[in-house]
Each structure stands twice: as structure tokens, then as C-alpha cells.
Length: 180
Length: 174
Image (cartoon, rainbow over the protein chains, first blue to last red):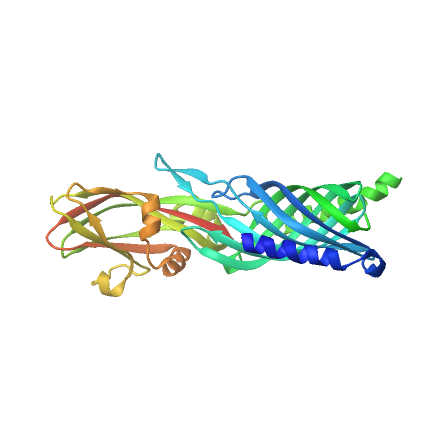
């Protein structure tokens, strides 16, 4: 996980360093950001509400913005009653790599597709399947930086064509090299 | 007017999200857990006992049996009494066929040579997850709904598996 974060941070940093405003042309905006928030599973008996966090880039092109990101979704373990005794179910974890399209200004809509690794400990194990993202958000700038609040629906496809759905509420900070 | 325009993408997205969620059934589907009491198995050394379960008798399973996509986890609990007063080794097998004459050769093992002390032992859910074998085959058997469990033990021992219970976590399809 640390290696993934480091690689993505380095890639986004290099992109920011190389893309100067005068050379931007097609690129109208360029930034990087980090976010954290709450991950709320929808109807998942083995997963409780947990944290999520991630990092992203923001690349503005005419009419929209592209957002590459890596997100780590965690859940709290859940207790279930079995014949009068309680057992604890270890919650699944998700690492998701995504590309989203963002439309709008301060208020925006977004939709994206990604690739997620879902790990079910002591069970089905890891599966790698597509994930779909939908949501909206509100971003307001403070100098070259902005604060971003974004609720999202994650449709995480799992093995055998099943799926898990989560709602994420993200609060993030972005830094724009230019274009904000 | 300006505010209305600026919130239109957000409104459109929220509407699309709701329609998509409703369309894919995600408001009613998800990941479910149910426990199924298999019952008691009485095992004597050299012989075996068996029990066949029909999971359609469980409401949760029955409600979703046609939509099960993946079996996420299968665990077991049981309080094993050792009636012989000497250490024993317990093995449990499963098959979609009942009435097998030689389970160790004809059925699929899920627990092999589990040590049962003279005083007996409790098999917890977490222990069962660590010991469980052939998860992939067990997944398919559970999707079928009817499974027969066979238990055997070594030597001249007598064991009773009290309240053998299976706990299944599954996720329904898209």
C-alpha cells in the first residue's frame, strides 16, 4: 500500500512539475489532492461504517476535468448473533484505482470507473473487478488550494458477478499548480 | 438563476445515482449472513455419522437463493464431547450426495484430523475458518442448497458433535 501511495504521489508530482502553465494549452487546470472521509456500506451484514482515504490528481481539459485516484475503503468488523452467542466477522477491505470525469464548477457532478481489489479475510480472499463511481460535490478555493466535499456511490463488482455498494462522504484538500 | 444552473450537474448526478441504485436493486440487495443448525453427529471410531441439510428451510437463504453471486465465508461452530476419554482425531467431509458408503474416499474433506482432547473441545467460528479446506467446492455445494455432512474419527473412540452450526456469508448478484 505504501509503495502504491508513493508511486502515485511521485507520478502526480512529476506531472505537476512538468506541465507549466505556458505549455498547458489543452490542459486548463492541474492539481493534486488528498481526501479522507466515511465509508458507509449499504446492506452488508459483515461490514460496518469505517474510514476511507486516498489521493488524487485533477487534470482539467475543455468541458470537464479528469480525476485519477487511488482510494482505500475500510469497514468496521461486525458482530452477529449465532444461537445465542456472538461471533465477529472480519470486515472486507477495498483498494480502488479509478479515473473519473468531473463536470461543473463549484458544484459538480462526477462519474467514473476503476479497478478494485476486494479482500475477504478468511474466506473468498481477494478478487479484482471493476468499480463504478457516481456522485457530486462542492469545491471552494482558497488561493491555489481548495477544499472539496463529495458524496459518492461506489458499485464494487466482486467475484461471480456479485457486487457491494458503499456510500462515501469525502472531505479533501487540493492544490492546483495552475487553473483554479 | 445562476445558483440553479450551478447546482444542475449535482442534481442530475444525484438523480442518476438514485435511478441506477434502484435499477440495479442495490437498495434491497447486499451481503447477508445466516446460521444453519446442522444438528448433532455421533461418531464412533472406524464408522461415521451423517446429516443432510436443506438450506431452503432458512428464510434468508431461501429469499436470495436465486441471486447468490458469491459465498464470501463459511464457518462452523460445535461443542465436541469426547465420550471415550482418550485423545481422538476428527474429520468432517461434505457432499451433495447423501448415502455415501465410504465418505473419506467419496466425499470432500472440510476438516481433517482435528485433535480432540480427552476432555473434548469447542470449535469456534474463527478456529473453523483457519482449519477449513476446499472452500471453493463448498461454495458450489452451498449454492446448490442441499449438502450432506459426514463425520469420522480414528481408532476406538466415540465423539459427539453437539449443535454443529454452519455460518454462511454471501453476496447477491448485481
